[in-house]
Image (cartoon, rainbow, N blue to C red; front, side, top):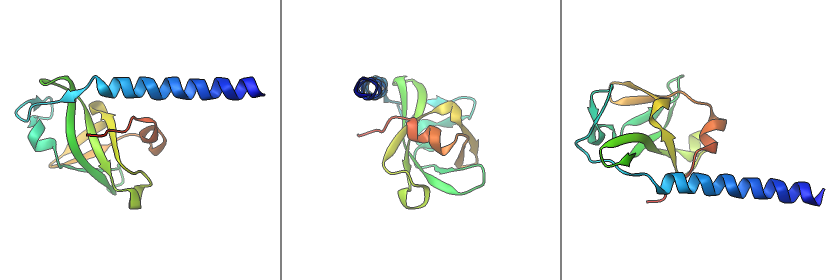
Length: 121
């Protein structure tokens, strides 16, 4: 039993370390970079409201991150903890969002969002 607990704790630490390493390798994208196929600049995406598919506001975009300053791959969302149960900022892959005017719909489950790394700027 003790070995199982140690193995589970080790796996959790490895997973957390991998998420932190992945987040650490991302950089802020330049404001003028276009997010295709959305046809929006990174600056226009920042501060966009993030909604769930039912239209409930979850939070807002704080940053656009990428593998370099010209390649957006993720958004940092500041979740409204009081209404969603999430607190702080989470790094979410850009392919989980669909634009709707100046709002973004997040198409992922709450459990998956909880698994994404946190972001400290």
